[in-house]
Image 1 (cartoon, rainbow, N blue to C red):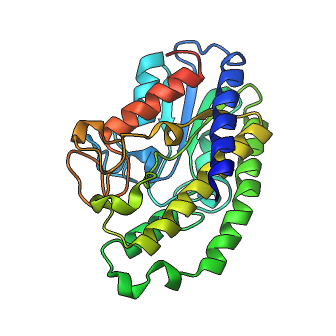
Image 2: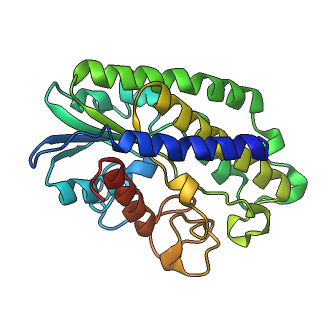
Image 3: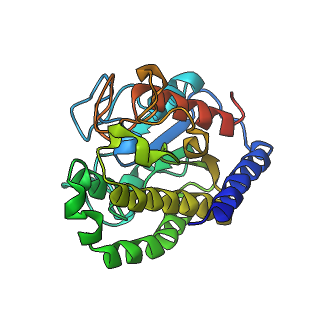
Length: 276
């Protein structure tokens, strides 16, 4: 994706966040809050772990719930896709969306990376020699099809959440940026230039889908991706890293948000709700 399109997406995200700010309703203490999504929502490797699905007591949704004194139900789960939210049980668990009821006031969700095989592709190619051309050997046709299908799946999810909870506020929380602009020179990624470029483009495609689909459906956005400069896996200080690379310096798991990343995502959710 070229630089012009990326700049337009960034500007659109900022303008949309400003517009959404003025539309946010108040949330009373004790209001029902449901958090959904995959490992980027659950908080894999962030203390303290609850022992199921990689959920942490200090993931971004738990921080938001504590800050606003909300009645919090966390159904996020490592490995989840949009199908696991709406129509396919994950390891026998109820559909995540079943936690949403008519009195739900707030839903946050981080989902979509597993739909397009983003994280699994990163894990598969990390540490492989350039001669293997790892990403070139991925099923790129299937990945492209999944990318094309994702906006429709996210849109259907948003609409079903609203059908179950007519007065709900929905905040889509994007993925912290795994691959910075200078990703090729980031040793923490342990990827060849070719593989880094392909995975960087996957991450950007995911971000663009998040921003545009949220706007199409009137959903608020908390967007750490566009604020990632200086907070990627090659930030010199562990406390500045919102996302891990191959090496885990403080918390989280490889290529996933750190405790600092979850704190930032929580701050952005609160900002989207007018509570910063």
